[in-house]
Image 1 (cartoon, one colour):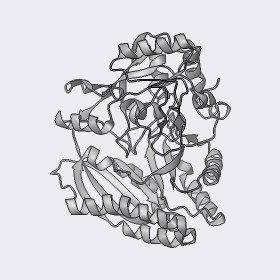
Image 2 (spheres, helix red, strand yellow; image 1 turned 135 degrees about the vertical axis):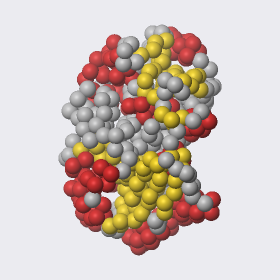
Image 3 (cartoon, rainbow, N blue to C red; image 1 turned 60 degrees about the horizontal axis):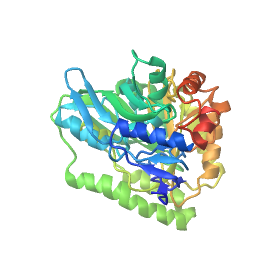
Image 4 (cartoon, rainbow, N blue to C red; image 1 turned 90 degrees about the vertical axis):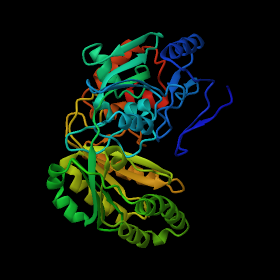
Length: 433
């Protein structure tokens, strides 16, 4: 297959690889890597395409993970599940539920593959539970020399530390072993709140909820808060009609119409946002964790996201509010604010510090470049770290000051991939080459 064009979900990136392979095992990945090396090709494996950066782009060999989508083993007693790299998280959630198990925390989109989600730093929000990479117990990778290796905190610990969130730059990930916990219920309490009240109560909200996040609608003083906490049960899921109204119609069908209207008449955006902010009302329900934590996103957008020290959040949001009133960007998407504890994953944006993640979105029809650049300047002033899968302009010289273990990760890369077989322009820009 030499004429295939690969495109990510948002349409921000395209690739025209010389060769495409769909391996069914680690051994076949190893053969493909060796063949690429013989031709002098670089190799990248794509996921589900939900990253907005060029992390997966290659003009060499592209590996498609669609045949690497099996659950290899489930060990309920040990709290471990091993899955192939191409398994979508939504499928993993269903398998785990069947076994009475669950991941401890999830991001809000479950369409990503296990490899793609972990390698780019997918995270949710949590008081004590960090992103997906923090839940990894072991990895299997194919290195640049075609060898198949395993790594964990006890075996090849430096490779594990770099590769569990490694942008695919240290090897082709073929399987992941996650820590899992007994299945649990979450009670979701969603309610509107003035922005100033959410910021004033931020410490209390973070301290008293297992998971908390909020969405702030530009040009309004209104946020929608989501507070999710473990409960014993019984489950009280949303009625089907309410889920269809809120999650399908309002947040997808109607919101797409809102964005199309705003594209034609941008002067109406402040008024539209006032209506949108009031359309989401209070609701409380209890359901299996993955059904509470994940949502369907059918409106296509582009996104930037930065991890900032949590104590700077109030000042950052006030600066963004001033920016939006000063510049006529006319943004319809709410800013999404989530939280994570400090973790020890070398390339995690939450490495070593309690973190607030601030994500900004623009509809696929809109212009995002100047808006995202202005936001990036605000985040940079507070030592913000970019999400690896979201649009940003930072380079290694910027990032090495922000990620304390980035130099160590680069040293590991020098050892396992000295010829940069698994690189591309984006990887070279952010990891240094």
